[in-house]
Amino acid sequence: MARLLGIRTLRSTAYHPQTNGETEWVNQELEIYFRIFCSNNPETWKQLNPLMEFSHNQKVHSTTKQTLFYLMMGYEPKDIPLAFDRTNAPTAEQ
View 1 (cartoon, rainbow, N blue to C red):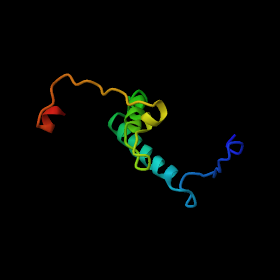
View 2: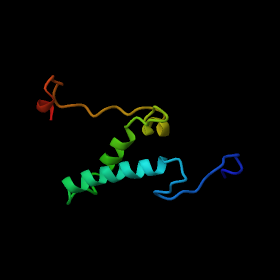
View 3: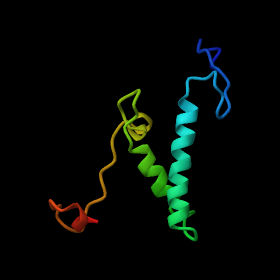
View 4: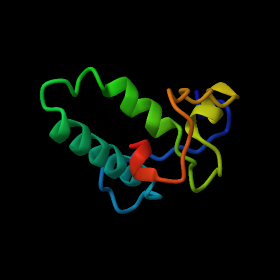
């Protein structure tokens, strides 16, 4: 399909030094997410995968300056409303 559209593709594997580094960057970031979610929630990490995916897709990408969610869906999702007003004390919000 890419060839029909005139798009040049390069096959890559994780940690392959000849690629542009994007795959390696994403793999490293997902590995960090999984380490955090799995170590803090060893019994329930599977249920937290949608939250992990949502938070990953909400991060602004350095190349496109857009979130992955916006690039996929065309709009930004609404934030989850807080049950209390924001304060100037971050520890109180936590």
